[in-house]
Length: 326
Image 1: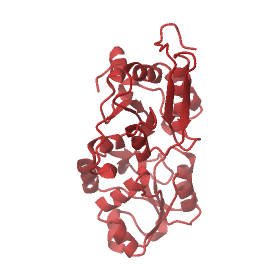
Image 2: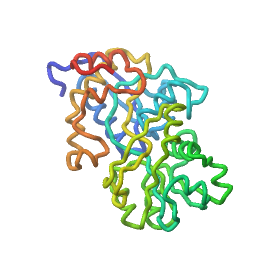
Image 3: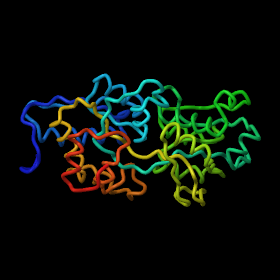
Image 4: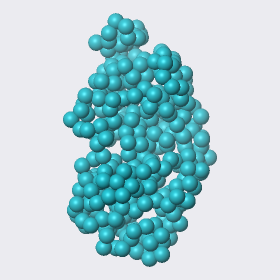
């Protein structure tokens, strides 16, 4: 139960959270927060955790008050939603606020079977190899599928052109089927995230693979137009990828709420995120932090570095710690 010095809300709370498909990290985060808040709220409190996809649906559910809290992956996608760019072109969501960042170090990586002779995006543009790329769908919700198509477009390979020369996509909502298809030879390339998961360790082992660096000019375009940051995948992190790889950052989960969330609820949720982090961190201690779907220990200074404004009550929790201001 909550300690005597922790905040409490004496009234009964009914909260709706939106996680993932049910067995991944967003649902686990929701379960952790649900228990910690329940222990610190009035009799009769309850929380529902709804399934979700961690993409544009996370924004829609907050904007329409369908849920009280959701998470979007990657964390910086919330900036696009708030500004009305990218997936939310012409439909800004200024009502979005953040409680903090759940830290995860991830990248969007393009890997191609070595037999195709593709070592760069320039090779793909010039050779027009009709690759079968395993990834996720670009359906207006999935941020991976959207990002893959925008990255290819920024490299001068729009989807229609790629399809016209005979290229194709095989798609699934989650990363594991595309990775399996590539390893089994059912796809020529895989373009996806979740690099810390064991299936990515198999990519360069199952077959000779070229990991394709993104071009500086393309990443600059994405940074300017969408606010998407670049990052480097350290050489040796994945078998067969010996050199540092310039690519797109795909890190972290941003905890989203509506601007009209009551201050005491936003404060309690954020307090629990910061002060009971050990309860979820220990669920990942069997995995080294750099290989974990959640990096630990949670650092409040990093948690408050959000791509959209913090809810004022959330900001107060971080301020009380005396850390850096985001």
